Image (cartoon, rainbow, N blue to C red; front, side, top):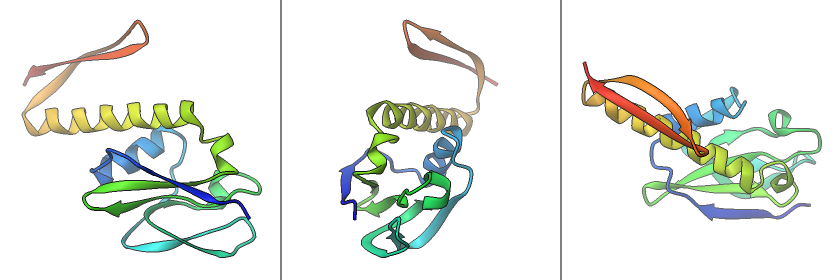
Length: 132
């Protein structure tokens, strides 16, 4: 049985987290008001719970569920040791980048701004918005 590692994140917006997971290829994401138990690769119920869950059948063969549990206003990430091979630092950095872009876009829209341009400069995304 692969142990889960839990990592505090800065993710606070569930809608943006789900959208960022979609950007990473996970379109079948469960969202729960009350945290649900994660399931291990043997179909066993784990003690870790999550409000945002990617079930193991979408993660990969012999995978465990991965999830994000709302605690004190932000999401704690639960990824098993086995699945951290695929969901490594590079993958997590991509998720963080996508999440951040989603949050910025959502906030810009609230302020009545429209996307003007999105470019990559020296590996960093530069986004410019203009008043509508």
